[in-house]
Image 1 (cartoon, rainbow, N blue to C red):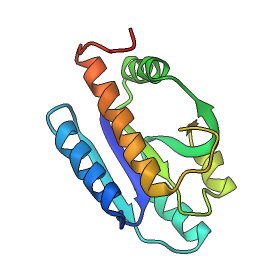
Image 2 (image 1 turned 90 degrees about the vertical axis):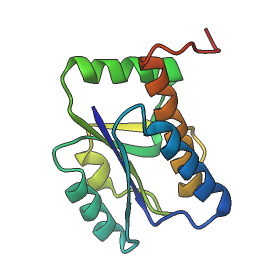
Image 3 (image 1 turned 30 degrees about the horizontal axis):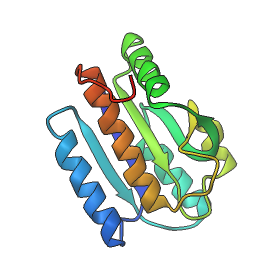
Image 4 (image 1 turned 120 degrees about the horizontal axis):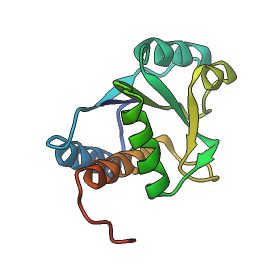
Length: 146
């Protein structure tokens, strides 16, 4: 299954740049994961760009109002998508003001990394870490929480 992560603007902060590079390198041998950066703009323009870029994908809005899951629950969800023969999944990380209602309504699911508001560069690194962790679990690596 291909994974697309859509985010507004490239990371500007040093920790985020380093984190993204670190997880891109670690994910490379595990599966097809693409991070695509979109230009910042008005909320409706960003939403439209994200919807266009994620067309044909199972869409997941990253939003603090979404469902909060453990790593094992997210792994089970990923396995469910594989069983349903989902070919492409897209995670959508919005701009500073968050996603529009139209975008959230157009998504198949809304996932939260926690109930707190999170700066989008930090959300990107946290999401990439979870995608990496899920890929290692799917590959049979042990999980320190078991």
